[in-house]
Image (tube, rainbow, N blue to C red; front, side):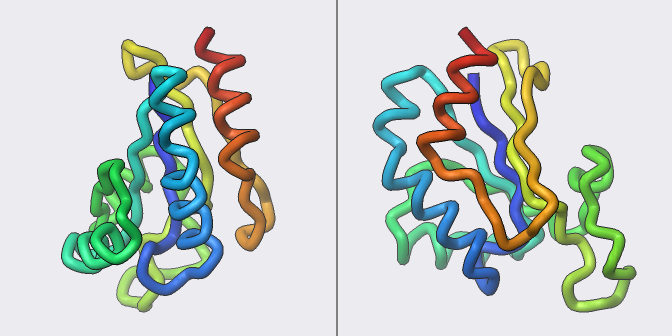
Length: 130
């Protein structure tokens, strides 16, 4: 299985940055449990790559600069309109996917400044996957 984390930005939003770093710090525990990590932000790939290199991130990032995936998942933050700087950011959260890529769990919180810590994400992922 895997966790698919959709966050605002790895470039400018401190809460997202901290969560990405915390997941990296716990990557061995995820690997040991057989759970992969994939991240998605609306950042351009070059901004993501800079973050990945600076922070030593080992899991992949996907760039959704046109918000097509964020829209398809119905997690677009509609407080921003096309053309506005922050248009395309998602409501931050995590999808848990099984080996067939079926969503078997979700972790979303209403307050965009709050994040579920990596240990709790891993525990929940194990619960819904195994």
